[in-house]
Image 1 (cartoon, rainbow, N blue to C red):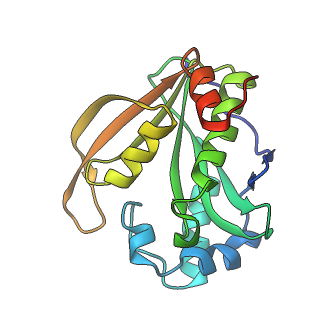
Image 2: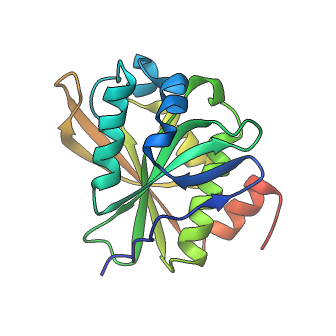
Length: 195
């Protein structure tokens, strides 16, 4: 049995607020990363060139039953700067995936990704009762792989020729996992706090 998927909810920290993704976030999200090929390089499909194109991508994500997408809102500005998603993981007992994540360039190499992952992973282990959080990325996306390792992700394997990229080339997908008993030490290292 896979983990129980949460209903849309808001998760709040000092740096970011994760709130259910809606059409109301589209103007901020387009300003953050619309039309930016580098932001969308590792996300399935081409970069949206208009707010309407971004709204269609968001609508498909919102309507997918095994996905719970969040807008990433900076607490300091109240503006959405990206999105991230809980994804069901059929075939993995009591697991959940965090994926379909992108952020505008203005928050790259900032505290935003770590803040989001701490909120999502805490909630997954503490409230959803999962025993494993899965993350995956393109084998060529070294920046993402380094970020996943930094938060505590352990390389679990690579699926070769897993799916096609937007440009038609084959993507190998690198899988990482964090187990519930591993997380407290990683959380303390990342936040300087224990629970």
